[in-house]
Length: 392
Image (tube, rainbow, N blue to C red; front, side, top):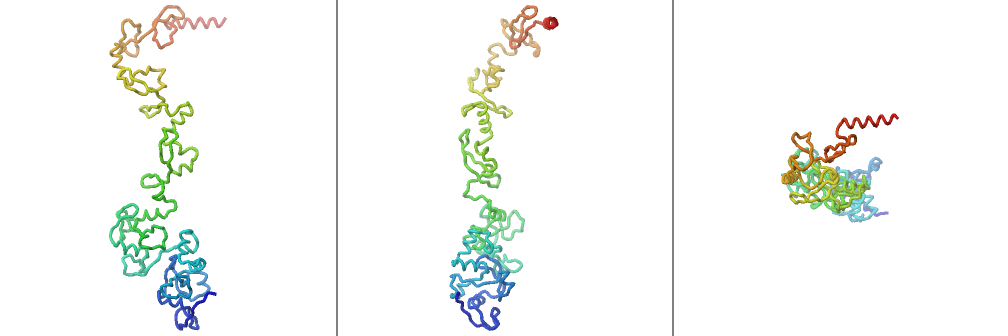
């Protein structure tokens, strides 16, 4: 059994009916006095009680705790107020910083979570509340930086102690713990912060400065660095996109590379295949050619090969070249067979001579057409003759 020193102090508030009281309880009572106090380890409010069933069930009565874990060292410097859970946990570990390590390792462990900050009774302090108390971390930071307007440690926005709640310029100043432990109120662990930064830092999914991330506005998103499978360039992609569709995302840096890779898979393209973009933004397969007029290189759409020669980079170069050749405006040379252009009054179209399939008389027709008859009358006679033969 652990030895405990007992003294006689008849009439003491904590003494038994026979006047006996434990020495460490008497010394701590003379040091901090009566009333409600904060636990030295977790910060919960505790108060002196002589005992009783209800007090034992609540486990919120004050217990004197020896900092060096020596029950015989009852000096005032070695005694601090504690709650029952913290005192029991420390007695099992036997080390003075056991509680703080438990808070850091298991922040949700019952009995070790500081639900309330430490409070100090200072009715005349500018930051005192209606009960005349000041939170200890606020008191430490106020003593270091003083009153007035300051800058947020994280975002740099203006903040002030006396700013009303909900104000944006300046915002309300909040004392922020760098290590996230509410009971660690050292001077080098406290920085001024605005309310949004303080709330975001308390979220478990917040992105730290040391992590790789991308930004969208002021929001941060965890990201990974990857190489594009098509253009081999480095790019950043959100980790959330990789988790939602791990088989499809994270392979290409842009939609253009994704489309190029899809077309390459369908049509056998490679990374050396050229593509161009129309004025409407559509992508097309192209090949590099040299303009016949200005001698500059340009991209020619492969799909337009059957419809145009692809010798010029623009209509302007085509007009200049044809003007020198005497072909501009459909004014063909006299030695070239031609027919009237119905869509252009006064214009002519290059033609070739073909034999009529019914009467055998030669006629002129546009070179790109497949005419077989010289007139509608010959075409009708040919159809009637074929239909009459089909009846017999």
